[in-house]
Structure formats: structure tokens, C-alpha cells
Length: 139
Image (cartoon, rainbow, N blue to C red; front, side):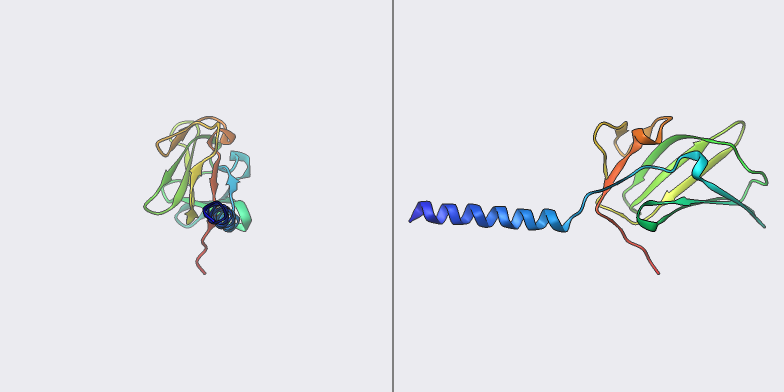
């Protein structure tokens, strides 16, 4: 009787764990490559965007510049308070672009990357990959 109860409990536990795993998909992403960033001049500086995962958009702005920048990826960070991944790009002189992907649910650094304590410094976006369960968009 105790063996049957223990076996039933074990099967139930595995079933529930499997259900929880199935409900929390693991998706992966990286910061956009510098060449994939669109730069748009506006009345107050430049705005930036790039295609994000699942139809989302990376966005950024720099009201202080009046020129288009040539930049390279330098780092990424995760801000838990706003659930945002932030990607930084730098170029010659004061050239700099920062893109943000907001509402990243269940963020975690991907395995075999350069993340440490929510910060990733690398010249390659692939070294700063991350996983998440969903992006919550507001309409």
C-alpha cells in the first residue's frame, strides 16, 4: 500500500513539473547587430530602432546628436526594476547608441556567455545572449 502511494505521488509530481515546464517556454535573444539598427533623424536628435524577438522592437534615442553614427556593440545589461535589456554601442569620439527591449519576463543569461551580475561586456552580441519566457507588450 505504501509503495503504491509513493509511486502515485511520484507520478503526480512528475506530471505537475512537466506541466509547469510546458507553460514556461524558454526563448532566446541577443542585442541587435550594429548593422541592423535603423537611425532616424528627427526635430530633436535621432531615434533608433531594430527588430526584436517575436515581432518586438528595440528602441532608443539621442536628442543631443545631429549626425548618424557608425558604432559597434560593446555591452549589455539587465535592469530588473523595469525588466529591460539595455544594449550599448560606441563609435569614434562621442558616438553612442543605447537600445532597450522592455518587459522581458523571466530574464536569465544564456549559458556560455559573458554575463556577470546582470552585465555583459563583449564586442560580440552572441556573447551576451539571454533567455526569457515572454515579452509583455502594452497597447
